[in-house]
Amino acid sequence: MFASQDSSHILKAFVRDILGKEFKTLKPRETYHIDSYKKAFAEDPELMRTEVDILAETENGSHVTIEMQIQSHDYFIERALFYLLEAYRESLGN
Image (cartoon, rainbow, N blue to C red; front, side, top):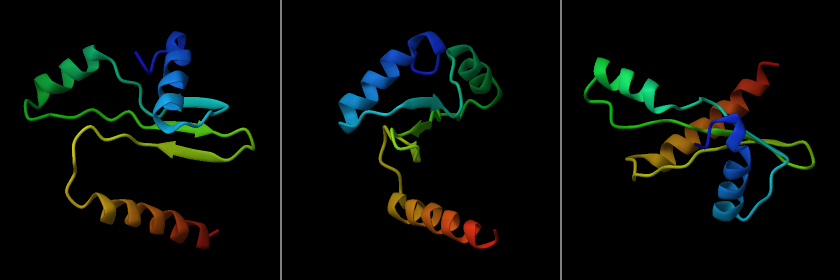
């Protein structure tokens, strides 16, 4: 529902209601559909998650990634710090 193009207004309203912030554009990084989930589950019955991060653009042109978790993950703070440092390190090579 959130990833289909004809439902972008639902995604915008959801993000606005959860984060209290309005974005110029929102684009799911990976589209999710129940049929692809069923296929992946058939190949790996241990599959217990989906991933639908959202790439967002603010009114001033800044880009952010919105990631929502439905379950608590071990080492979430450490993983977030790793991603932040990796993004910083990556820019030094340029």
